[in-house]
Length: 304
Ligand SMILES: O=C(O)CCC(=O)C(=O)O
Ligand SMILES: [Fe+2]
Image (cartoon, rainbow, N blue to C red; front, side, top):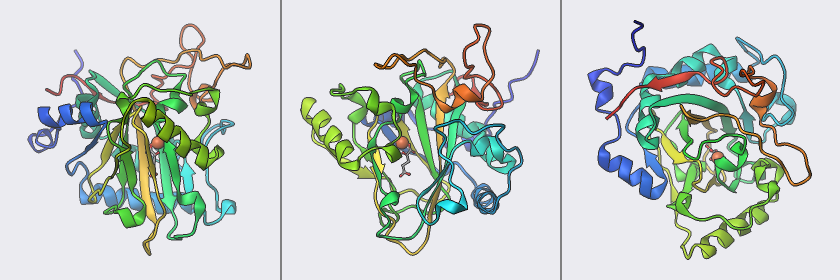
C-alpha cells in the first residue's frame, strides 16, 4: 500500500477554514485565509519571480498555446500576466503545490481532491495612470467552459501585504449565487481582450436581474495569507497607486472530479482552452485535465 503524501502538521491543521468559514465561503463566494505560507516561502516566490522576469525557466513550455497570457520585456511597463509559472519554474511549483493550500481549497469547495488548473503570475507596475493595470469585472468560470466542474476556485496569493492602494483583488459579494443573463460566446474571451465598459455593464445588468446590490469587497491581504474565490464570483481590481509593484500569483484550482468537456461555439467551432494544446490525451483522445505535469494533484483525502 502506498502512503498518502498529502499530510498536514498539527500547526497546519489549525490553519484550515473552520466550519463557519466554509459556510461563509458558500454564502459570500470568497474567503480570506490565515497565514498559509511561511516568510521563507513568500521570499522564495519573490526571488523566483525576479529570476523569471530576468529570463530564467527550468522547463520552458514546449509550445505556446494561441491564447496564452505571456508577458515578455518587449511588452514594456504594462500589467504582466504569465500563465503556467507552476510548470516553468520549480521553485514556484514547490510552493504552489504545498498540500495545505490544496486542503484549504478542498474544504471550501467540498471536494475530496484538488489539482492545480493554472497558475498565472501577475505584476502591476506602480503607475497610477496605467490602464492595463485595471482588471475589469469578470468571473473565472467563463474562461473554463471546457471544464465540467462548477466548483473550481482561485487562490490569489500576493508576495507582500496587499492593500487597496495597490489595487488588490476585489470581490462582488455573493455574486456566485446569481443567475446569469446575457451571456454569449464573447464571455469566454479573456478580459484583456474585451471592452471594459461592456464588462462593467454586464455586471450591473446581472445584479439587476438578480435583484441584488453590487457590494464590492477589497481583499486586504497580509503577506503569507491569500484570498479564495468561487469560479462564479465576479471580481476585478483597480489601479496600483502605491510606489511599489503589486506582485502576485493567481492559482486556479480544480476539484478531483473536473474533466474536459466539448464546448461548441455558435459559429460551429469548438472552444479550446490553453491546456488543450499541451496536456496529454486520455483514452478517448481528449485533453486530460489530470495530466500531472500541467495539473499536479495537491490534495487528496478528508479535511474535516
Ligand atoms: O489581479 C487581480 O486583481 C485579479 C486576478 C484574477 O482575476 C484572478 O485571480 O482570478
Ligand atoms: Fe479572475
